[in-house]
Amino acid sequence: MSTLELRSRLHELIEATKSEELLLRLYELLHGWGSGHESGVWAKLTEAERNRVLKAYSTAMDPRNLSTTEDVLKRRKA
Image: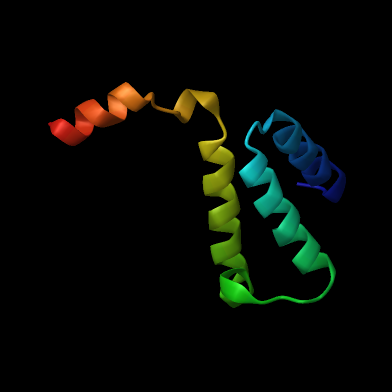
């Protein structure tokens, strides 16, 4: 995937995000990354681990993969 394609996909995900908290966390992550102040858990991950986290996030943002609260509660009770 090219840099241009990655940027485009990131922009699409950000535009589709409704959670202000998630947007704030993404901002903090990217801001910290860009300023060279890598710290915390993200800095300790290998490139493969980071890619897995980003892939999981992308999968979680797909509405087809989301469950309703009722479905989750039903599974928990079972």
